[in-house]
Image (tube, rainbow, N blue to C red):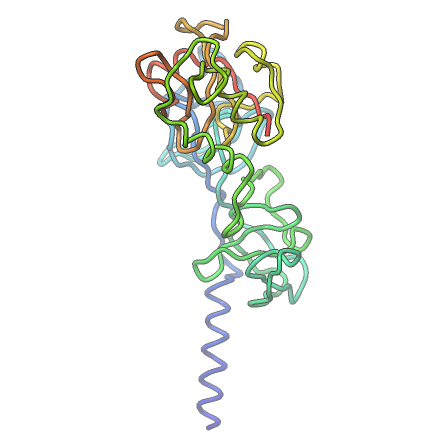
Length: 291
């Protein structure tokens, strides 16, 4: 019996060591969020300081920051620079700074329960934030610790986690808009009998108590500006009629996954399109968050 208890104790101890190593930790990992991003030899943007280019989705290790640039490692290329606007950090290490820290399955104020504890100086893999909580990887699952008890590298900015089972207002609005796929395009239309592009946005948003201006160029003054790399479901996206133009003539709503819904043309009506297509990429002007 003593041998069994001793073996069980050692097993639990090893499990904790594997879950929260002290000596080794995950590097800060990032991903490129735009097409054809310049990689530079030093933290300055000019025509002479360009080593090569990388595409959307390229993984990199972030090792520091210098002004508007991240210092990164990309495969065999060490200590090169990429503009911070084009990189999203999705994982980093965090050092526990208070002993006997509780780990929760959900943030405590959302009904979370303690599932484990971790001591100070242990390293945890931090993947996201939610209010005053860090989302961490624990035994392969999402768990939470209070932000005050974990220190991450000073330059790290993480995405807000979506809690299991939760739906954002933007996602609710997108689901409402999808029911009108196939509705015909009508110039000046603002009802389900027919929409133009801005009329469709105005109608959908009004059902959630959100008021926007009538035409697309004026809707581009509603809400707050959002970088294309930071789009979320429910954001409005605006386009020009000509390649590289700045005069807004069309609007749609981002739905996630690089797609947006819009009342497109007389031939197609309301449809979903790829915002990263060659056509739309070359005509994209701006995005606004009104939700």
